[in-house]
Length: 275
Ligand SMILES: C[S@@+](CC[C@H](N)C(=O)[O-])C[C@H]1O[C@@H](n2cnc3c(N)ncnc32)[C@H](O)[C@@H]1O
Image (cartoon, rainbow, N blue to C red; front, side):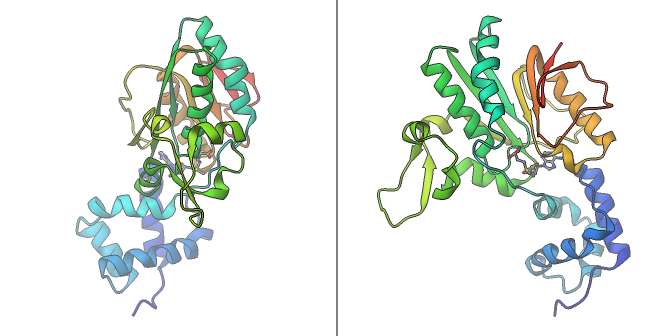
């Protein structure tokens, strides 16, 4: 029943929509990947062929409800606790003490492409420890992503045990709950830590957005790589508007801001301070 292929025409229409909607490039080489991943949506919506599914999306208003699923299908969500650990060392040793010196005792941080939550919960562990050491007095983290699938998982704070391997033992003891039933392999972030992280859906491609008062720390890691330069410039310009002067922007180790005019200066590898 589902043996047809995604035509070049339908693929082009889909990839154009995806690029305009969320900035993710879908070159021709990804056609079979998209086809494979979309079969699940065909089954879920009951359309027997890709051409009928695309007809529904583009000519009968289907995109209004399908866009959210389409995005879940095309986003890459790889993440880890303490991924790129020198960023967390920088927070502990440089950013949080410097912010406290500038009068930011209560630090607001934003994980702007948070995926399944390992990044904001790692930030929360580091910040909770800074509160314990009285470097700062309190903190709050906003964690956003475009994909509703990953946000659901992040909100639950439940992970398989091996995912917390990179978390230092002392932090596991304080911030992770182990199952009483030893045969179970899932762990959960403590309610106290979870209460410090608020999750919301946000598309970094939006022309503008309201995320409340400015942030002192913004993570935008391992998402810029999916965007072209024009989209990167838009996303980073918007993020800089949400950053306090003297606040920090952290990007992924394989990402760069070269050639983009931003009100920031580099202070460490892939770490920038707003001027
Ligand atoms: C590879 S993960 C990176 C997760 C985390 N920042 C890290 O470095 O481990 C990329 C995330 O970016 C999200 N994403 C892609 N396009 C986006 C957009 N336009 N707005 C917000 N999030 C987006 C994806 O859903 C995915 O969860």
